[in-house]
Length: 175
Image (cartoon, rainbow, N blue to C red; front, side):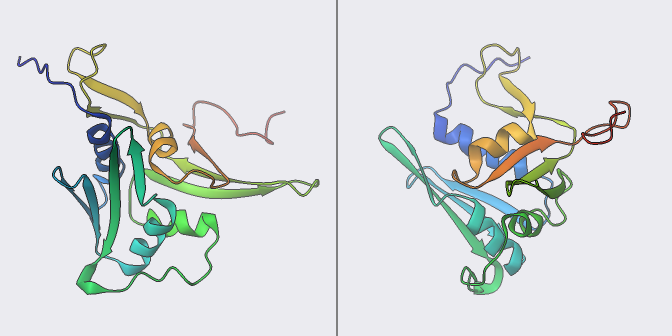
């Protein structure tokens, strides 16, 4: 067994979180340029690219390093960011065909409060991050936790994990 001892900087861990979120999505490829601290998401579908551009930040600051995040649609297509899109629609489009995504659900209460839930599959995801508390240096987490870190702040959503059938009934269906 090979033991890795180099400590990854936080912008590399952020890049690995993005890779973990989209590694099973055949329409998204991720590249990283360490010289310019730039992550590029190369997206085959223009609608998916526009949705990702809406929910991902353009920059993330880590002390004196600013990580730039670019979403690039295939074939030189333009990103359509002018057409209005609800938050749930943006996540549904951004995760179309991605097997880590379950669904979005908007709940409106009688008091006028609305909450959009972004629900991910019930799976543990692992990626290397120099975690000294793990024998292999990995972080083991849920997609909902990664989503909290990688998507824009200020979006009125709650990230959560879907239930398994054996867990029980969702809220509102309890006896």
